[in-house]
Length: 80
Image (cartoon, helix red, strand yellow):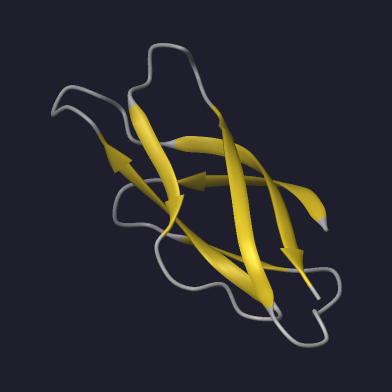
């Protein structure tokens, strides 16, 4: 499955994503690609194990002067 989330994920403000359909047995992997300004120094990741029905994305600043907000991201989930 794949999708796009419009959100304002930032440090301390995770974003929960629900898959359009749940996997029958498990979600093995979630890949996410943030859509950010090139000057933003942030890492966006999945910190918890994804479930059959969704995942939670977290943002982390890489410097104290960096903006940690992510206005949206693409995601792709692999499972069965």
